Image (cartoon, rainbow, N blue to C red; front, side, top):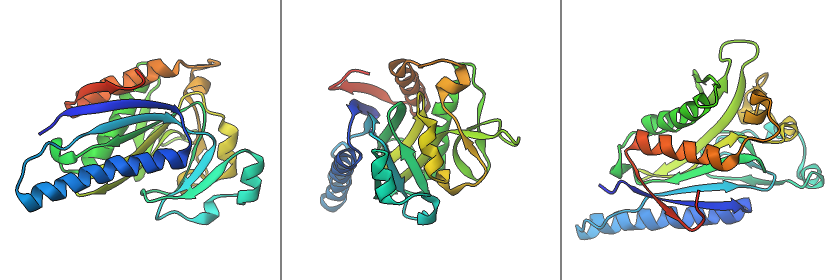
Length: 238
C-alpha cells in the first residue's frame, strides 16, 4: 500500500479549472486500478492532496435542491460569483477568498476502505486544527461537516464537506472558513440546512486575519497523523 501523498497548493484558482484537474488525477488513479485488475499487475496507485482558494462560486451537489440558492445567476454575476452543478454529495456550498479548500484524491485501498471513516477522519483533522486555536469544534449528528456550539441556539458551521468516491478513489473534499466574507453565505441556505448560522475562524478569534499558511500546515499535520500518510510536497510549498 502506498502511503505517500503528494501535496500541491494551487493558490487562487478558478473552480472549473480546479475541478477539471481533480477529474484528471481521479481518472488516472481509477484507470490504473482497472489496469491492475485486468492485467493482474500491482502497479502503485498515487494519492494527491490539493489546497486551493477559489474566486466566489456556488456549487450544488447531485442530491442538492436548486431552491437553496436564493438568487439567480444574473444576480450572482453582479456579485462576481459563478455557479456550477457538480458530481459530489451534499447540497449547496459557497467557496471564496479567505477559505481553505482541500481536495484529497486518495486511493482508499492504500489506507482503509470505509467512506464513513474517511469522512469522520476529515472532520477530525479540522476539529484538531481548530483546537490548536482554542476553538471547541464538534460534529453535529446527521449533518456532515464541523460546527461550533452544537445543540444550542447558537450552533454555527465553520467547515463544509462533500465528497465523491468511485472504486475507493476520492475527490472533492472540504472548505474551512478562515478569513471568509460571510456576506456571501446570505445568498443561499448553506448545505440546505435552514436556521443554522455560518462562521469563520477570524470572527471566532476576534482577529482581522488568521494566517492561512499556518492553518494549512496544521491541517496537513493532523491529516498525516490520522491517515498514517507520508507527505510529499510538490510545486508550491505549503
